[in-house]
Each structure stands twice: as C-alpha cells, then as structure tokens.
Length: 178
Image 1 (tube, rainbow, N blue to C red):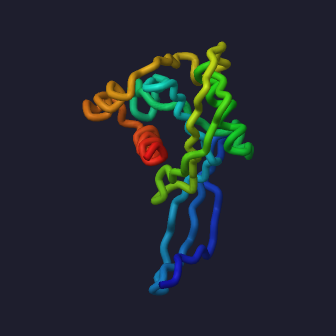
Image 2: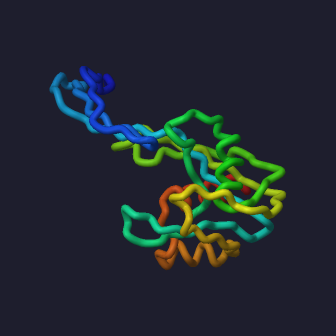
C-alpha cells in the first residue's frame, strides 16, 4: 500500500520549542486531505537509577493545570540539534543536579505519532553523584525526590504518575534488565 503523499505545506506557527505546519496530502486511494503536524526536536529522557531508587522531578504542567511526577526530560533550546547522549547529560544536571558516570541509551519513543514528529531517546543514568541543578526559568517550581521502584509502580497504579513517556521509559528499563 502506498504511503500518504504530501502535496503542499505551510508553517502555521513557530516558537523556540516547536513549529506547527499544515500539509496538504494525497491518500493512497487518491483522495486529498489536510494534516496538521507539530514538529519538535528530539528529546532525551533520563532514568536516574541508584540501586532500587529512581530520581524523579515534579513540576507544574500548564496544559494539564496540575503538578506531575516524571523522569527528567527535555529538548535543546530554540530547536537546536544536540546529540542525544549530550542532551541527556545536560538535562540530568540541569533538572536534578546529578552527574552520571554511565549514561546508556536503552531505547526510543515516539511522543504522539498521530500529530507530532517528535521522537525521544531514553537513557539509563547510573553511578551518580549529586550537585546543584541549573534549572531554566520555566523549571523554577521543580522539585526532585528519590523514589523506590515499588513506590514508583504504586504511584503509576494510583494515577499519581501519568506521564506517558515516563511510564513507557520504565517499560524499556524493565526490558533492558531482563
């Protein structure tokens, strides 16, 4: 079966974190349509692991209107391309103050493939030392905590951790450990 073909494109919106475009498309059956796409740079998600403890961040997520617990994660500013391992080390230090002697790529995630081109790389960070975070202004309300794996799983079950990328990353960790 043929793929959807782009027949036109126009940028609808742009800021330092994303662009939104509207593409004219032709479907495999020949019919025309429109597809809206949010383009964002690749992000890094880091699982800081110390024995049975995971280091999480909690912050206010404006689109949800509430605070959420999740693994440290982020993209390069102003849509810059940064190699994922370098981005992972930077995000880990920026959000938590942690430095890792070992940062291992354990897999990839697509954020929302029905509407966004954004992809992410998941890194396992171990052999950690503590330092001072260097948070961006948007992260000024961020808190961090070490949480045991059993408690982390209970928080998922109880709906206290709902970040899809963090839950999927934890699945990658479990598969990596097999």
